[in-house]
Length: 375
Ligand SMILES: NC(=O)c1ccc[n+]([C@@H]2O[C@H](COP(=O)([O-])OP(=O)(O)OC[C@H]3O[C@@H](n4cnc5c(N)ncnc54)[C@H](OP(=O)(O)O)[C@@H]3O)[C@@H](O)[C@H]2O)c1
Image 1: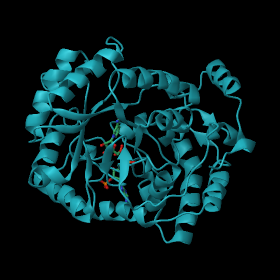
Image 2: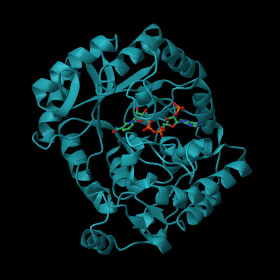
Image 3: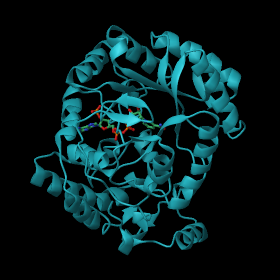
């Protein structure tokens, strides 16, 4: 395995520097990460066959999944209609996608209904992943709640909406500071014994939380943001997953559409747009990150890949246990994204691309210290 020894970063020095300057998404001030700081001492990629099925722990899935969040959540677009989304999900399956991602909070609730409706006819041929851990008041999200009784109650509703007798991969969506992770893992363990859940996953948690949970109940997958721009997971998280045999599922893998030419330096969001809260999408940051898009486009052109395809293929090439879940509401985007699985890289290509990538300073991305606590 290649090791970026020459790009090594003194982690303690960097963390204390981040703490001193107060940069990072946690405090709401966009950070500027210099090239050397963005490498996070990452051990480097592997070349691997990217079209084969992959393992998240012992759970076998297609190399790319379908993220279903924006079908109803209204995060990046107005909610879509069930009758328009069912063909997208079923069309993805026809292409070879067997891994579908949703959550109780998307909608809330309605996203699981769409996924359940679409997958019912092919239930035994697919892997359904969903997430919980929130409280709802009058049908709206109202804070976190990971108490075992809430988890067990939530799963009953999820099974109904998903039209199934089991959730193949149940993630804790966000850690609840009021509930020890061991209690969450214990509740999921009970659900696994009852056959209502098959595998356990976590999202956006620290290495410490991963270890504590895994000691109580095997964790099959961690789902956290990772892309060609937001690379903070290369600091301690991917290594932890590798050591413990846990799969990694990057959300935001096409940078929320940025790799699909959705924005450029002239883009301005309306006041109510959720993109306003994305620190790497300020006007200044987008202008800077066009350099990443240009680099990805240059490399994609040389390999016959679109930027979105290259961005996904690059993630697949980092580790064999990585399974990106690009979100889309359009079948032609799913087809494009699935095309990433046909890409190949040599070791020297991956090294050269990373060297070029790390020369570009990033704005508004997370600093390494932020992965050491749960989000
Ligand atoms: N665990 C968590 O906390 C968490 C957080 C966020 C998301 N997620 C999950 O991860 C999935 C993916 O993350 P994400 O949706 O935030 O980000 P993403 O996959 O990077 O980007 C999704 C956006 O990109 C657009 N897009 C996708 N493929 C494209 C292509 N080939 N060309 C042009 N545009 C394209 C989509 O628009 P169109 O609909 O127009 O294609 C959509 O608005 C979600 O669906 C959700 O299931 C999890």
